[in-house]
Length: 276
Image (cartoon, rainbow, N blue to C red; front, side):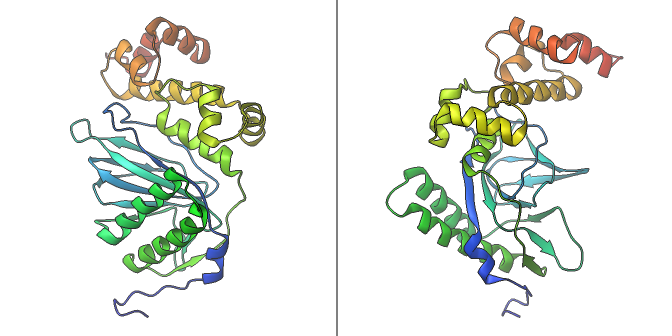
């Protein structure tokens, strides 16, 4: 029991195997405000650095704001939706080798409101280390991850223990996360390979082996699924939606949408909202 009255059961040795898979910042150009539900074979930490919005975890939906942290356990579907007036900006961190489990009631996620400056400081330090990639950045990163985990356990007044999660390919998971966040950008196989610092032919083979889909097909799927969501839940024009999800041409978007879904974007919207 610590001085703050919080109790945690922690297998410290498990932290030795905790491996950072990726750390990414959201786009800050005011356009990437929605993504589709997805999951990972590892824990993901979602830090809101600015703005407001909502977070969706399985069948739950709740408000999020600056300085909130959401911890999502492995294989749990989740996504975020930004407030259009106070756009979300965030940092996501994927860590393999642990999962956080409430000893009395297993959970899919933790929401921690208004984290202190210490946690945010180490999040930004971790991002800077992996962004700069200077000497010994991975070793420094492991220490920063350990500090972050302790600070989160200290902040959250629940009992937690640490368990290993399913092994994943670090570079391939990084690429998938990059697509999930930056899907509206002009993404090519060369861009993805450069982001992961691997050969593009190896990337294509390994991604398909891991997720049973090629990276560019996955990109297209994310864009189409996001477009479906926007057609179902907003009044944005077809042109606006095609631009939001990353298509330079509305006609190409409409052709691809009909090929994949079997309906034109307008017909899909009418079918989902027959009164429109």
